[in-house]
Length: 415
Ligand SMILES: CC(C)[C@H](C(=O)O)[C@@H](O)C(=O)O
Ligand code: SF4
Image (cartoon, rainbow, N blue to C red; front, side, top):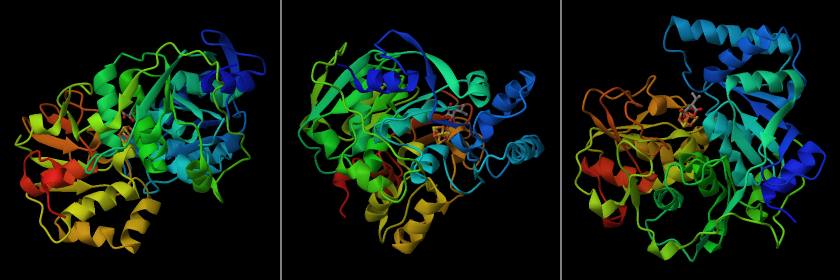
């Protein structure tokens, strides 16, 4: 008798939990990166806490401004490295290992039925594995470092269904942008979004991560795909702990049950400066761009780089194109199977696995009035540089547009 969220919270709180109940829940894994660990550790110290509750359940990846871009961030990172050592936290991932939301799944922390929190708003990505995962603020994270517990209001749930199959040239990102366009940036505020239907189960693990990554962009507390064989295969030889898959009951209560058809979905583009300002690519075709960015926790995985490479093979990009693999593992795999060679020969610029220019700190910040087509998850005003304009799309649309120097429908490119 419950949604996936209600069942996970019932287990984590040790008593039956229903939507809108307040519960004190045990956290399975807690993540903070170079950007947010500084605040969390400061708050932890202000609480006069000496030892974290369980070092093995804390994961600290350095990804946001790594390598450091100036003395201030270098010094803050130095302090975090020292704290990690002092606390004996084994799951520390140095710069170059990759983006937090890629590093946690790759290392088997994102597991079905678990409760994960991260001091980062896109922590909802781990819902792709059937976990309840959400972002928290740095002071909440300090509380978790100290006690391993956090108060939650159990969210009500939406049941999204996407029936049928995605067409040629249409990817997980297009499906995701389409759903955000339909729902609106605050249409699912504080809800847990469960995803069902043929188009969802046909998504790869990577595609499900793209979808759940952006649940926050419709205001949702988390996005969850029920785990299946694809999930279990991915977790084989990888899971950091035993896990118990959790599924919704037949009579689970949902506050909304929207149903969409995958056949209606064309390649989508989110236009400046709001993520739900979504249009079919045909409506923005020909828009001039100055830069293309392929990467981030949304679309920097091997599958994404492969899609881009298939389009760019034997051709040359017409605008500066930055490619940042989501992790060292992704980069190595792309080197091993020739994807990276294809991309480099096409003229892309490769940077260290991490967040790159996604949040406007380094490695590709925009100049006044410049336009970037990005595979990221946010196009807020000024995010990649004051005065810049960001369009969001799939890696296929990004690659096709890189070839033309303007927004291009990937279905029109000969492969
Ligand atoms: C820096 C961090 C707090 C932020 C987030 O929480 O999402 C960042 O990752 C982002 O994507 O804007
Ligand atoms: S890649 Fe972008 S969205 Fe993802 S965690 Fe980094 S800054 Fe945030």
